[in-house]
Length: 238
Image: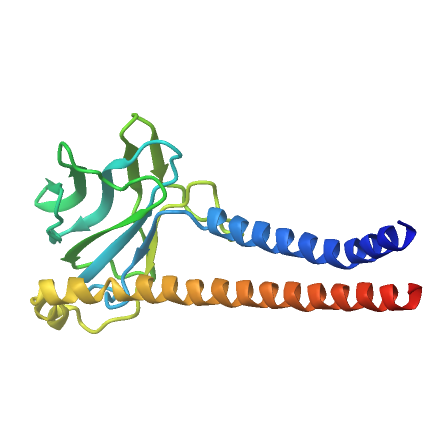
């Protein structure tokens, strides 16, 4: 019985640190996912004073209700056309002949953006202001009536607020005239805009998968080491 107890103690000393490391690793990865769940905006082809496609990436942060409405505030554009989305209707609001808002609302019976998932809402428009960054305050509404108002600007010190407004960075453009004509093929352009976020998600998935393989491999190595130590201890006792 003494020998059996000794072997069990040795095995626990070797295996428990590995288990603890695996738990810490999984907790860290989970924390990364939760912290990054903000509404963001992508507009890689839009230039200052130009036209182009903007895509809002909208994660559902609710634990029980789908996202059923999204309203984005625009900086006063001469033109803004939302992309056609199955299960959603869109309304463009104008003031003094300038587009100031676009609102997407899920159709009755539509799942909206379900819990644990995200949606992409795109529109083509312009001309955008001739400035480096443009904020697009966005109001996200859930089926249970809860709302998340993503409208807080980034302060001068760069600290991220709790509900930061989606912000796009615009490269310096030309005279702004040719950009209007470049935005004509809106359908094909809007399809291509989905690729940056998709590539980012694929890279994150590969990264997380790689870490999982490393943790699994370490667990296997330490497990085999524990088994060898137990066997050697048994031979000496015999």
